[in-house]
Length: 430
Length: 169
Image (cartoon, rainbow over all chains, first blue to last red; front, side, top):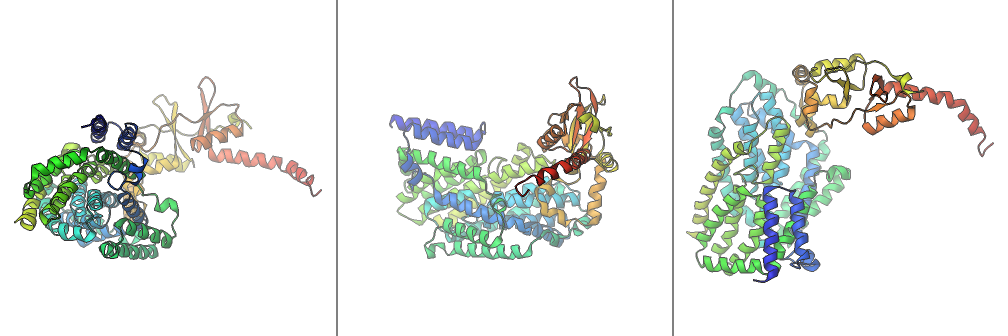
């Protein structure tokens, strides 16, 4: 191993520790790490900006940007607030039924949109409903964010780790739908049942309080019906574009950007509105992260690790998938699953390539996706959506401690990951 | 006109004052905000009226404005009634407002200086204090605007004369 490779590993590890511990803002850690990689000569402009394997993954960046703009317009319509209140009223404001409805709405929305955005949209209306019900909103918020992480696993665009995996593996939107959605539907059904027991103390029904929910006027949340219909029309087109992207030979990022452009054009909103929800920090964080991981690829560290992993795995892909599933779940609970998957993706790509394109080798991607997505539920820092929800809860006077989250998160992660294991075995290795 | 001539005495509140009482003070005296005093009665902060409204509107509604539309009248009245359970201290304990130094002017300051402080501090109230820190009253936004309008009116004939000397003359 060269001195440059050793230096690159040192820079990566130090930056990773800063990202995991949040001693400094994660954007600063990722950009600082990327800058140091340039200084030590582990990467350069060509590799960082134009290298498909060694630089910024523009497909990921622009897919995220496009979806953030689409959501930025969509949230102006009030459709999520309408749906959540409508669902609570359909549930006759009975607490468990309300939770189930909110969980299902969040999970389905998370499959079509980014998790962070979904919980940002659902959490405020949940606080309103719980205030009307006179109940503690913490169980509802926890259930929603966990449903978001489970539901987001179903599609290519549902969870940032999936976006990274799709870009690095050339897997299509439909590949994700066919391989991930069935297990996600099962996990969601189990999760709904689990909520009944996990949060049983939150389901106290008072008829007078239920009346306060029934008095809410959900239609009033939609202030611009024309914008709503235009937005839903474009969103439907975008989803059709995702489903057809491999047949049309168009990258998902192009679909998202075209959809964003169309929606901006037909919405008539100002740039402050449709760009207001773009998380520039997240996009810059991704860029820094890709340069750091790309530097490791560039100096040969990932290649050597890949060879070692290939030798260790041999032909036993089920053992590798099991290790990836459980290992990813544990590590994603400790560090944010985005940097974890960004690091692991090139390694898994090497393993899949060495399998000669077999189904058993290819299933390693699903093991990584399931482990990382579901592992994100384990702790308050496991996924970006968790951090957002705990922040919203704290600002509204309902702090969720790290251990409160972990107490429920570990149980949900444990059950969902354990259920995913036989799914992988039955579907790909039996 | 100097600050000392515009200063007036307005009621102050303390951190323990309920939000409901604070709302009454603002309404009865038509103030643009609140003067918060310490236990010794010395003003320590100015809270603009729009910030006081935060005690009435739940945070989740402020973060998602479309939720404001879903309340019926009874729901809105409930939020009003909840003001009795909140105190002015809630504003200071919140991370939403920054307790900046008290916007103040000197008794001899002119209208320009008074207006500049109001603009810079985004405050509808400024207190008048001498160099020793002695408090002598408050200038309200309405009082300052009235003084500005009066000063402009006094200058009007001079302005007309100046116009008549322009290029068209």
